[in-house]
Structures are given as structure tokens and as C-alpha cells.
Image (tube, rainbow, N blue to C red; front, side, top):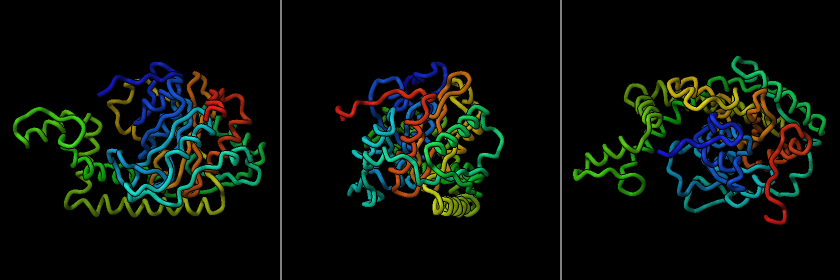
Length: 355
């Protein structure tokens, strides 16, 4: 429904999705901050592809009042910025309990900006080697990941191997849970209260025409998948089973984070691909979410931060996941990497006196 956003770092390449314009605007310096919505990676993937920061807060840390619901048990509002500090500044503005969103939590607390400068000495970073051992990770991303691990170790952090044994089921689980919830949520989209409204004198035809015109091809595909998963005879086989696997994924994260302060892994298996390259291959497109959806299913905070570039000069983003409501720890680790790694070619954020 809108023109193709331009990746400021690599025109002709995608900006990631779905909060494409938000990341592109920050990368292009059209603004210092922006916000997006992250269900399975829609803040973190664009941030990685555009070379900026993108934070998916803990589920319940930020009010979703005013957001059109896609998958209610997953959706989160998160900030984009060009530095760890700027990301913290915006998170501090939007976090906290809101009586208009019953899922928002009082535990959500602003980040102490001075804490970002404490470094990583004494922190333990978990390395989930099992999800890094699969095929499909671009060599440049793997090399960037290894370099980041060494940089954090030089800065004083300890690293420890952890396992997320059920993360391999995350894509299948996510694309059942999310599409089922989208099917239920978007059934309310009728063109009467907000958004596009088709012109037709007959009420039922207006509903049909509005949904037909207002939903793009990919949205329709996800609604159909979700409707199928929720249909009689398939609910137990798909949706109920997916929720059980989701519980196992959440348990994996809890166990890994019980002995570490944060987990480090890539945001995406590749850097930004060409515009239109995967339009006719939805499965390949969905597999780009392989590293972003586990944290969404677990409900934990996850931060995408710029960590370098591949051989073509395309940005590479790495991801930190942490304990619930510990966004401060993630930003502290990212800030330590930001301060220690000049090769990532950071773009300066706003000056301290301007905040």
C-alpha cells in the first residue's frame, strides 16, 4: 500500500520487515528515533538489515494501545535508534504500565543510562551453539559473530555454552500460533471503525470488498493459514500442539538465562537480499526469521545491534536476548561492544545535551 522503502546502506536491497520504514528512516538520518512493532522479528530484522539498533522489549513492558493487533500473545512495540544510549532513551519514554492495555506490566522499568557505561566485566554471555550449528548461516555473519564474542571477552565478559534444544521447532510453532491469532484478530477488520473502507451500498459486500482490497497477498496467506489451523478437526493437531512446544521453548530460555546474563546469536542467517527476490518463495522468506522468533515465543527481551558488514558492505546485526524486564543488561552489553569495536562503523546518535 506504500512505496518501497529504500535501504540507506544498500539501495536495491530490502529493508526488512515489517517495520521497514521505521528502520530505514533512522538509518537514513531522517530522524533520531522511530518505533515499530515486533511480533516475530519485525523490529530486529529491519534493524539488522539497515545497520541500526532495534529492541523488542519483554512482553508487557510497553503498552500496545493504538496498535492494530496481529498476534496478541506476541506483538510488542519497540524503538529504533543509531546507538545503544539513544535506544535506551526512547525505551524509557514508552515503557511502563498502561491501564488501556491489560497486558502491560508494572514491573517494566526505565533503563538507568549511567548503567550502560559499566561495561561487561562480571557478566556471562551464553552462546547457544546448537542453533548456530545448522546450515544456511552466511560465512560473513558467522565470522562477525565469532569476532563479537572475542570482543566481549576482551572487554571482560565471560562466555558459556548453552543449549536451546527446542528452538529448531520455533519457525513451525510461530507460523501456527501467529497466523491463528492473526486470523482471529483481523476478522474484526471491517472498514467501519478505522482504516480503509470500500465503497459499496450493501453492508456485507462492503465488508468483503474492504478486506479484499485492504489486505495484501502475504496478509491473506497468513489469515488463511491461521484459519486452517483453528478449523474443526485441526485445532488440537496444530494450534494446541504448537502452544505446547512454545512452552518448551520458553522453558529452554529460562534454563539458559538462569546461568547467564544474556544470550548472543545472529538476527538473520543472511544479510539483506534483493528487493522482490523472495516474493514467490514464502518458505524461504519465513526461514529468515529462524533466529528472531524463538525470543518472541519465549516472551523475553531481545536487542538487535549493528556488529559489522559483509564482503559487499551490507550491514550485519547480532542479537542479545535476556531475562524478562532486563532490557538494561542487553543495552549495557551492546554499549560495551559499541565502545570496543571500531570496525562496525557506527553512526553517531544525538548529543547528550540534546536529550
